[in-house]
Length: 491
Image (cartoon, rainbow, N blue to C red; front, side, top):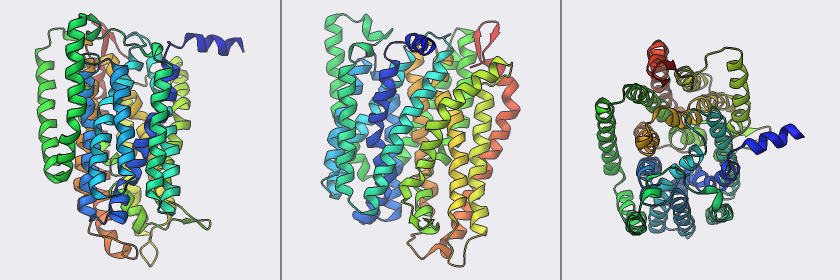
């Protein structure tokens, strides 16, 4: 008992609160992430192409705005203020969507995406600020926090599946509204524990603070109508996001090239290479609420032991693996490292790409063994999601922790946002691949299976190929990643 108390006492103040806040903050996103395409097609009669295009923009703005949030948080608005403000917009957005029309969907998404896009970086920044750069507990903290986020996903996906089976979409979005509101309550109860540490805003004079706050609030609320408009032009917006992503990548490359500190410059170079590899990973991962979900609905036999599996429940395979596997992987890696194993970021990224590639290659194999009606046995998509989930566990929380090690202090927020922008870019790419799928409905599995087989094979082999390239680059990446001028990092 004394050992447990001692471990709890050593946890930086605010870290435990952020774990529980993360659970409730995730609920609204989990509901929309898993249900948006189905809601748009089944309730609002959108075409598959229109629905996946909106889903692509949903992912792009949700993750892409993290870059903006990383810049605003700690500079114009404190991270805790921006987080709560964003959650307020999410609550309003879910409530608006629950009203049930296409127009209210667009306004609701405008509100929700502004909030979730700007506040997710804040919670990661609040967590990483609780640890010194050399503190090895950071990775474990992010693994635990990632497990908390996936607990929120698990609850959200489970509720979404239940409401999906009874087609009560209004009730589902009200549930999401209440969940997000609880995150606000928890943040307010732990307000003092979540104070910003070592941010530029802390150095501002009272007059400068007010000016920056006014600018930050104007941006926070001004983005809503902009996103509302861009959602109506989903395909054009997707192309714009790709152009912006390329521009941001060039800016980061330029900053790296001009950076004077050679040690930090090498770290930034490693960050760029690893981020490019992660783009491939997230493109496959973002197929889950789009092409993979449509495949599960129309081409997979979802009757298991006499029970119909809701499409959202399939995504709970991922949530369960992350919840259970996050803490276990943190303990396993610690034990292996204590024994002298060199398990670092390059190794984990390479393994993640190989696993998610194999996870996609499993699906064409399952299609080859499909029943006479074209339906694929449930076990194949189960195996695929299992492999994808382990892969995510290797790359995602470690990627967040990596920023604290590789990013110079003045670029930390921007590089955290850029890391998340990569996922948004991948969402657009995933929507393009999903848009290649012909209009499908129940009973058409035999006609659409060949298209799915081609797309899944192409994506799977592409990820495996990039994973092999990263394996070959491991020695080079290890030379780039350094804690000090003469010491290699083992992030």
